[in-house]
Image (cartoon, rainbow, N blue to C red; front, side):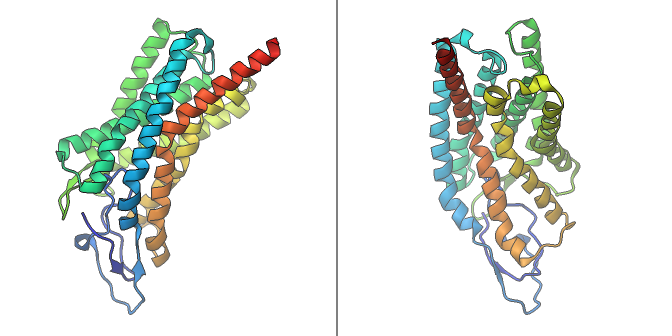
Length: 316
């Protein structure tokens, strides 16, 4: 596991990016990956790595515990009043979203341990972790998208069951490039990296394209469709808006991935300021996205309680 070091402002970026899931890869500015160019400039200081290693495990542990509690409360609410959930918060849709956030939360403990102690579970489990991580994200994105623009989840019948199978199978297929692009790298401690291949390799470019479609293009298309179709806006306030928190939390990370690719592909000129600060921006944006596993179920549960409270008030 590499260390943060002092470099010149003209230093080129390292091969691996610093991002939360690089198990979180995290310590990309390694001596072996650095190219030093001495232009008598003052060195740049990147202190992201040690800060990340101190803060990330605790953050992930708290997020995981909160997600388990909130998702459990959501599942209890679904079980106790199964017929109280109607479109756009149908029981079938909310239950699947809870499964997605539960799967995501279950991955946080091994990720936290990998950050603290180094990845010790081998390359196979590293790739499996990335596969499940992105399977959960793609499944949730597809579920939120389908729930926003159709009434297919109003009933749990043969049609919705086929749709559910297609959604989860499709999400697994979309997550496969993430597993193929990931891998372990040996250092002082072994790291499990989100990207262990070249930045321009076909498998990583495919993974990046799919992520940008999920985090940026899909929410943009759904927003345009919602604004253009009045019937979609009818359930916006309490229903769809709660599910859309998923996109709101991940959009910044999608933008960060775009800039990260441009920097690593040298389509944007790296500067000292970029080297010192961009890792913080990318790490914070992914941390914001990770919060979806606890804030998402909480928003769905709150929207349900508000809707029940409004119904009770109107009937009274």
